[in-house]
Image (cartoon, rainbow, N blue to C red; front, side, top):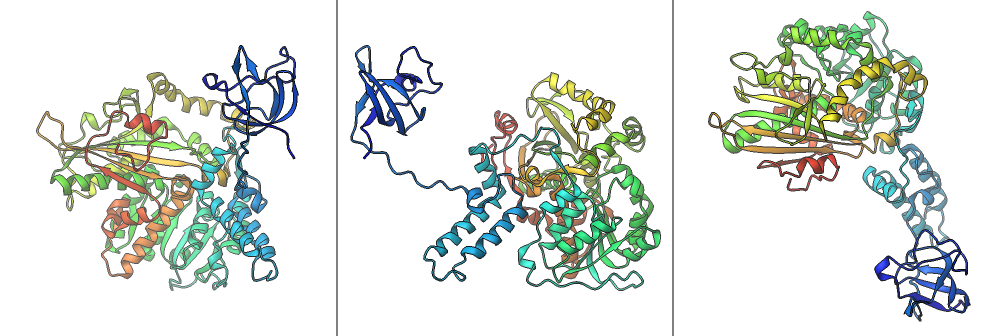
Length: 621
């Protein structure tokens, strides 16, 4: 039988009563107070001093307290008994995996544990069914990125991502990936590769499968079973690993090592559509794209590199139109999502108000996004000033086209200095990404069918809380380039071939906000609307898996449309030009992009909430 139960009845106005480490009033005080209403068990009582063991409430687990102070009662005897504690749900303990376990480790642990307690295998165990349900619940819980992220945060299990050597190499990232279990029962090997044939024996060819995004594309493609697919790349060892892990379903055909121009020509003839995940494209070149046009094969490029895409479409665009071949660049998550976000805003203003659009401003808020080592090395190896000159001389903001009637205007230029943004009330810098070129190009391509507006202006923003932070961003690129080798040696940046691990990729969020203004009377503001597009955690919000998913969904969209007899727009074009009329926007929503259009200007607190990561898709904004 336990000791006397006492209840804390004092200290309500001070957050509880003082606890000391020993009986003496001069002994050190504990950091925490014993909360009002807490229940404790008596261990020792000496005059007016009580040694206790905490049973319920907040505060130290044990210590010494006074029963009274200055005539005020602090502790009172009680008949109360603490309610029995409910077993705490700990999915990691149930499956026997650590908090940083990958999805593959979780699935493997579940398979092993479920064999031991499955009701069919343990008919004499009355608790087998409940154990199996608990295992299933833990597995499904941990495989939900959002539930797992919240649980980790509440239980302080999230490790900081800004630390030394936070990245993984290709083999480590590959080991983290797990093939879809649903496809394993129907596993079969496809036919061997045959380059000396004109027969198109596969729907989709993943080119560059041995890079990070290409490898994730294999994982994504294996999880859908409606289209046949093959892979190609330069690294034979990695191709074999990919084939053995993801080439298990009946839809997979073959893996081909491509090294020569002859290999490229042959590969272009084996598929209905080639999705190119290679990079950097200025080094990969246009040979594969040219071979696809000659073979009559649709060709999608994930990279948004405008210095590759412009000369490419100028070189083969006309021939592609004649041969009814679709060509598109910037088919990854960032440029495509921006393109469709602006397109949907313009369409909404046209459908709702019957007006053209004067301006769209795009704001991006990303949490947990990281670059791979190859992306950093490639970006720093190129001459930024020469790239700026090439773009300026090739059309500036309209490098890919889309200039408005009357020619370029002053408001079209992206001024490379901090400015106070009138819409957000924050300091802004032009975002140094290719999104703007694709959006402006789309505007020009839709002029003859669904014009966006003769006065249309698009701006792409990176927001900062104050001018000092915006000024500092100007020096970052130069600093990163100057100290790259030193940072590489000190393991502050990932080396080429390495990138963020699975847990980091599954804990990132991405939010795009588009503030659109309709044309109004000269000198007056037009009707404003704003659109919110959000993804995460992980999945489409991860720039790597998101780009793999976006590119493959684009390919499948074109194939589905072609098989249904829909008209494909031939030649080179932006993502919206090729797929907006094919219902691709609905496919984005089905893939997990949350979307909301608000029929008014945003509230003053809108961007403050966005920056604080407190804005949800359900807010009235």
